[in-house]
Amino acid sequence: MLHLDDLDVRILREVNSPDCPQWNVRESYTAIGRRVGVDEETIRLRLRRLRDRGVLPALRVTVNPHLLGLEEVGVDLDVPDEATKSAVLSRLQSLPGITQVADFQGSGIMVVVWHEPHRAVPWLGQQIDPLGAWTLRASWTTPFPEPTVPMRPLDWRILTAIRDDARKDLRAVAATLHTTVRTVYRRLSALTEGKAAFVVAMPKPDRVVGLLCNYLVHCPDIDHKRTADAAVQRDFPRIGMYDTGPEQYSVFGMVCENLSRAEEVLAQLRSLYGVVTVRLAIVRQIYGVDGWLDRELDERARPSPRRAVGRHAE
Image (cartoon, rainbow, N blue to C red):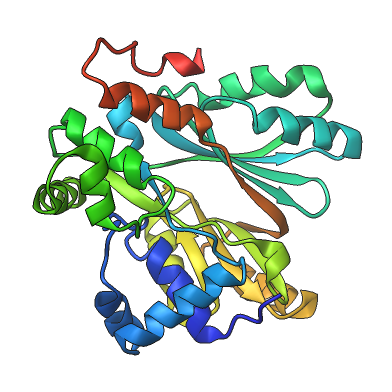
């Protein structure tokens, strides 16, 4: 297990969500180091240590959901029965359209769903209703910009080639795709500018000393929320990820030394002006569920007729 110091946490935040999300899938270590105040080699060594110790196995690449005609919805569930919770977790990890599942200590689960607009929550309910009693605590839509780059088959093939590792050697990628490194760089630059793909970094809670804490902050007033979000990002240095895009909710992932500190943070967040509720959850495990997405990318990478957008979620 690794003790994450403040620099480790800042690096996690920078590679994952400085722009919510991080669109530059190949951002240089120099640029990251400039933002956190260290040199390029320090960033390289810290990321290597996080990978080697199993805290951050790889920086994965995923696509803007709008390219698939889908939207991203976060869902916070309460499943009080342990047997039902196990069944729900198992079911969620097999569903096409689910991209992440966070298993919290106790009865909580957070799910990230990609689905056709305005249908994610009813669809998810239909999938898990037969498994037992559960309660919807909250749901929110994470807004994504419309991608501005016309996607080519080569673009899909490039994204497929680096899906498992954003830092993969582009010379090997170019050789596999029978093109040039210059072409790969040029298309990745276009994908970055067009907000077509972004980085996903999912740390392993069981490899970290302390607690990975998930805070769901509900602030209905848009102006108060903007002020509260800025205050949290300014005053809490141990934020490893955040999503402040939804209209009424913000999600902050923080590394806390112990439960006492986690509860102190909870009290501080609740005291922010305009905040109505804050839910604290201790992360037990985070699962990436994206085999279905790999198949979607593979299909679009082939120069052949494609199935209807979003059909996986029917």
